[in-house]
Length: 167
Image (cartoon, rainbow, N blue to C red; front, side, top):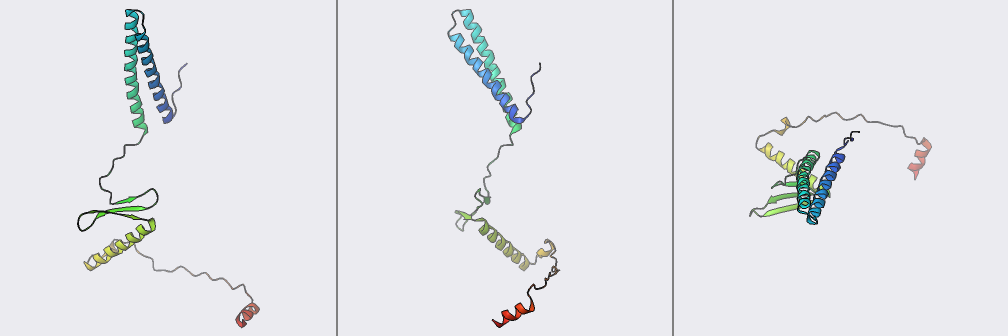
């Protein structure tokens, strides 16, 4: 009867771990048996079994590494300079340097970061406009039509209106 193949990535990883642990345990048992062997022949046999299982441990370890590398995403590299970084709390950290080349880090809430970003974009647009660069070529068109107004009749009667005006 053939053994069933692992169906998922987790099953592949667990199968690799189990095979590695089994080979390691067998190698340890063979070394212990060699240590307590009564004869030289028995010692040589157990030592050879231990070496066989040590080789199996190495191959199982390499197979497990391949399985893990296929299952897991590429390792994340740390960027040396991230000027704007979103924090898990929803805040934003902005890194820069002052006039004396000292490092400065601003810790902003999300709302503060959006406000500052909007202001900086507006100032950049004004600066470009003054320099003769028209940014309207790069901006999407703005519709100038207003939505139709929806009116509903007043549910109050004329008598209700007269009493409210008298008060």
